[in-house]
Structure formats: structure tokens, C-alpha cells
Length: 256
Ligand code: PGA
Image (cartoon, rainbow, N blue to C red):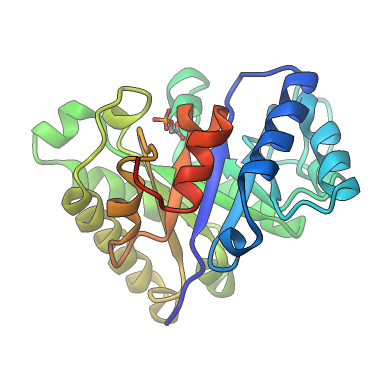
């Protein structure tokens, strides 16, 4: 069963729309056609930049998938300051990250809310990238699998059987995000394999189809080893996605 890896650049709250255009142009320049043959590449700018990036991708026929970092679960309504999945759909967004650990930590997002968002993203013809991952203390206490399993079951609870095969899950141990402390390839593989089994227990046929990314301090030097693992189908990249050459190295799996 071949799964197409997805390498996603999560730009977080960085870059104004001029800087974002420059980054996507530099990235396009760094990548060659054959780089896209076996992987999908998505860029996830802040909301204020999505329209600009959409225009540049279209005009220059770039091969990037367009992504967002979050959305509301409702299509419209009195939710001051929020952005709806219907608005993202209209901007030709392909992938929406939901339940990133920073949103779980700073905006109090629960598995229930993440499940509602994931379902709404699908309902608007986009694909959610559902983030899960344990904290350092939980890993040290031997609770990592239990915590991640509860997040996977809770965050996917509203999806149909077909959607379970299409969803992307990003395993991002919280202690590895932005710390330079990547999970070892073996530990990342073990958890991604476990997540795959959990998805399979919800709906058997989804087990071999669901794509599972690893995220947490992925860079040009560790990407190749991580991506070579059987159950890791790509990466969710934060810091290194803000630098075109570094992100391009991850996409092309070149070691530095
Ligand atoms: P990082 O972020 O690559 O900077 O660790 C990953 C993420 O938060 O998605």
C-alpha cells in the first residue's frame, strides 16, 4: 500500500504577506519538478497571507498545496475574530491543521472541539491535519501511548469511515516542538505505528491508508532518517519551514 508522503510547512504566527510571498517564491525556486514526484508539499501561512499565497501559487503554477493553521468548526456566525472553513474553501485551501498542541495549550482546545473542526473541514471539501502528541512528563511517566490514543480516538470521533482513510494525523510530541530535541526515528516510528493500529481498530481498512506525519524539530539533517520509517508518511515542520533552503532539503530528503 503506497501512501504519498505529505511535507507541510507550518509558518505559525510569522511573516507579513509581503514576506510570505517572498518565502513561497524562494521555496519554489529551490525545488525541482522531480521533488514533487513522490511527495506532496503544503504551506500553511497565517490567515492574513492565504489570499496572497493563493494568488502567487495560481499565477506561477506552483505545485504547492495551500494550507491553513486552524479554523472554526462552524461555517458562519457570531464568532468575532474567527475564520470559517467555508472561507478557507473559497480560497482553494487543501489542508487545514486542527488541534495543534499550541492551540490545545494556549486556546484550550479539547479533543471534542478538534473532532468538530476536523469533521467541518471535511464537510468543506478540505483535508484536516489532526495533531496529537504527549508532553514530556507524560512520556517520562510511561503514559505516552495512552495519552496519544485518547487524543486520536477523541479527535477523530466525528469522522466517517471513509474520512478515516483520508485524514492526515500529525504525531508531534510536545517536548520536541521548537526545542531542537527531535524524537529518535525509532521512537517516532513506534508511536506512528501505534497510532496506525488505533485507527485500524476504529475502521480496519483505514489502517493502511491513513497518513501519519511526524512533527517536532524536523530539519534537513534528521528528515531523511525519519521519513525512511515505515509508518511515517511525511512531516509537519515549524521553524525549518521559514527558511526556503532548509525546507527544500526536507522535501528532497537531502542530508546536510
Ligand atoms: P518545529 O514545529 O518544527 O519548529 O518543532 C513543529 C510544529 O509545531 O508543527
